[in-house]
Length: 353
Image (tube, helix red, strand yellow):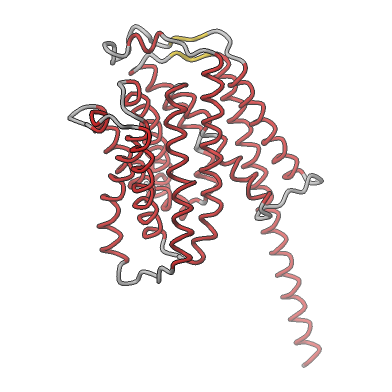
């Protein structure tokens, strides 16, 4: 049973993310402002994380200098506030399934940025390097397919979905080609912003090593930032009302489950099985989202989106497999160097004696 816990954990993580795409899409469809949603979501995450961070880490908190504060502020602005606001607008133009599909580009974009910043190396003369390049190429092909080729539309379980009243007219409406392309590239921009946040966060953690406090500070700062953005774009007071409806449910779900629970679970899985194992399970988000969207929303899915998603998943696996093989080769090389040094040390002792 102990060995199966990481597998169960990743299933929970990816299911939570699938629910995130679904609930946010529903909240936007019923009229909730994307900017107000982000503000409330980050406020809920801050209220959830702050007491935990204060209780466990306040006495042992590393010093927070002005320069570190500025770095955290910039990370929050571009990695969280900008990313979440952009993905919210993008989901309005596309679908929950497409949002889940493009999430597979995140590991590839992160890898690409790490190469540009010289944090990763690519040797195209080796098979791992070729696999990485092939993976990036497949992902680019998948994005182009999703954006520019739609093909026939598939209405999965349209007559059997659970929500069939006020969303019916919205489901039957198929976005125009221009609107769809705009949504796809907004999703990519969001993933690019999020990937940049992942890369730069590693550098900030060297100066401020408390992961929980860093996350809490970013949630708090992004709450303030997203509030300013929401005030600028949403002037109607009625847009800020939640009530006991799907708006409140989506805010609480994303604030507590997505930001709070998955943060801990992802850290635990990486500790037990490594980051590659967690990244390899990313396509499960797409599978869960398509299934849930079919039953709950009867969502319209184009053949081009399915084909593009397969290319994205294939590209993700090529990059991750190339990375895994490269790490195995590095470990083997280090082991051989260690054996040589050990043998040389033994030989030196024999000569000395």
